[in-house]
Image (cartoon, rainbow, N blue to C red):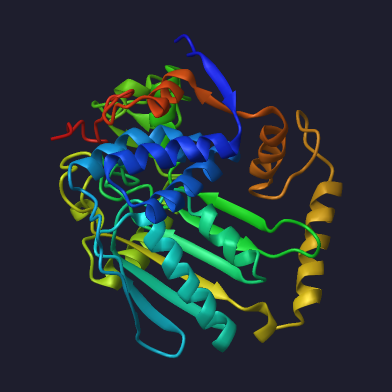
Amino acid sequence: MTELEMIKITKEELHQLIQKKLEKAGLSSIHADTVADTLAFADSRGIHSHGAVRVDYYAERIAKGGTNLAPKFKFNQTGPSVGVFEADNGVGHFAANEALKEAITLAKETGIGVVGVHQMGHSGALAYFVKQAAEQDMIALSVCQSDPMVVPFGGAEPYFGTNPIAFAAPRFGHSPVVFDMATTVQAWGKILDARSRNVDIPDTWAVNGEGNATTNPHEVKALLPIAGPKGYGLMMMVDILSGTLLGLPFGKHVSSMYTDITAGRNLGQLHIVINPSFFTDLEQFKKDINQMVEELHESKPANGFDQVLYPGELSEIIEAKYEKEGIPIVKSIYDYLQSDTIHFDQYNKASAFGEKVQ
């Protein structure tokens, strides 16, 4: 395939363009600002699968009623360190961010804060949330369920979603260690990104309608779990923690992003925030994280590698590069963000099952 034309813009311009587009679709300024911040954050760290490529879908869902524009948010503290944030199918990024604040408050007071987000929309890259907690000297772990689009180990049809996990811990005098991963070889958004750029994907990412490996992102019907049965086990764990635990639909019963964009998603998410000072000396903890990173950097690299990086460090390196050179965005997506159009359909909007948008 021939790669599409790219342009480079600043994070600030990207944020403004995304926010303006979402407001035009009907989202309030305060909610649009958080969504734009989340998406620009993703693109600025090279996580293009969760960046501007998603705006078309979000805008159309907002415009067609699939996002509650006036949600009645409510936090119900159900114990000294736990609670549930009712998102009322409001925009997921904002709901998840508000729930995180509650979890951080609980952790500062009691040592740990565990907050589930009940009935939310898609919330984007989880790294955005855990990083914020780590910047307040907290350890954070976030998990969320997603569309059933992954073939289980030993199975021939999708059941669980990509069900991501994100983790962050503070460092002394440095940016936090941040690690964010899907429990699939790649997130569904990576397929969308490849479609938008018209490029091939590795044959280890996904399968076509016959269950065979494919390099064509337009043929993808289901994704593959990481490490076979191990990734399969992790995605089950995430689904239980962020879905079943909150009394929400689970597994194949989770609603697809694309089958009916006029309806709420009813997704779940779980933030676990830990206050290190309740377990050990905070400053020493942060210095120990620094030592770990330094020792990893000093480790002998394998052939073909210049240096051993800590998990997630590549995103930090990319962020520094993009800050100097600009964030690369597919020109057609950039043109869409600048236009007055809400619906663009710059990739084939189909779920892992091939279901079309209604």
